[in-house]
Each structure stands twice: as C-alpha cells, then as structure tokens.
Image (cartoon, rainbow, N blue to C red; front, side, top):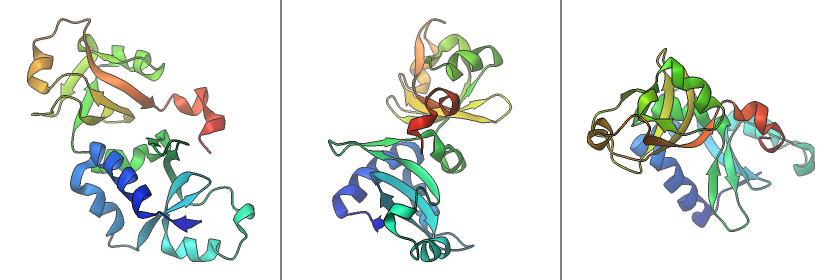
Length: 180
C-alpha cells in the first residue's frame, strides 16, 4: 500500500467533493484516531493509521484489502466511487434525496429516481450535483447525480428523471466480484 500521488489525490478529492463538499476534512481530521487514504491495486482505501502500521508487516501480495474501499482508478486515470464508501458519504453528505417506498425497489434494481418516486430533496440542490439517496426511513440506499435543481424538480411531470443512478446497495448482489 502506498500514499496517493498528487495527481491521484487531485482526481480522488475532486470526485469525493462532488458528494460531500468541504466535509472531506472531517474524514481526515478525526478526534478518535488519525485516518488516511492509501492505494493498492488501483483501489483507494480509507484506513486508520494504527491498522496501517500493523498491515505494513505483511507483504504487498499478502494483503487483499485493508480498511474501507472508497473506489477504483480506471486505466485512463479516472476515479469511480464504489458503494462500499456509502457509509462515509451518508455521514458527511451535503445534499440528500429521499425516495418514497414505491420508488425504493426500482432504484435498488439500478433505475434512476423519477419525480413520482421523489419524497424529499435538500433545499437549494443545484443541477448535476452529487447526492446521497435515502429511503423515507433515513436508510442510505446509494448515491447519484441530480438531473435538475430543487426548484426545477418541483415543476417536472411525474415520469421525468430527477436523480441519475450512480450506484446502490443492490450492487452488493449484482456486482460483488468487482467490489473487492
């Protein structure tokens, strides 16, 4: 495991800031113990420094995963967030969307959030902004990107898309071989 390079840090933090904004500092400056981001096999892991020190005693090939996988770098250098980062995104999300019970299953099967399924949305959410998608019971279901701003979404017809699907907890079942 190695620290991220400047280019990788820039790409990673730009992608992460779409969903949690300036709350990135809350991930790194924790009160309980220090945490950091490390790269192994093109995947970025969020790990405590205490666990990282213990993991350093193993060879690079002996470690499959350590900490929480936040995502993966593609061969082209782009970064893609994984559903495994949802717990941290949900804690620090700037903008949120709540889905009605009749819209949960379509979303968990990989469909976009329609206006008819939209329960609530954070005030003043801009267009093309990263959001965390919750059920009406405040259970994080996944994350996506808004198709319209809050004001524009109020005027849409029920079959219009409000949030573009990025990933959801159903991915644990659909695409489990690529998560680790």
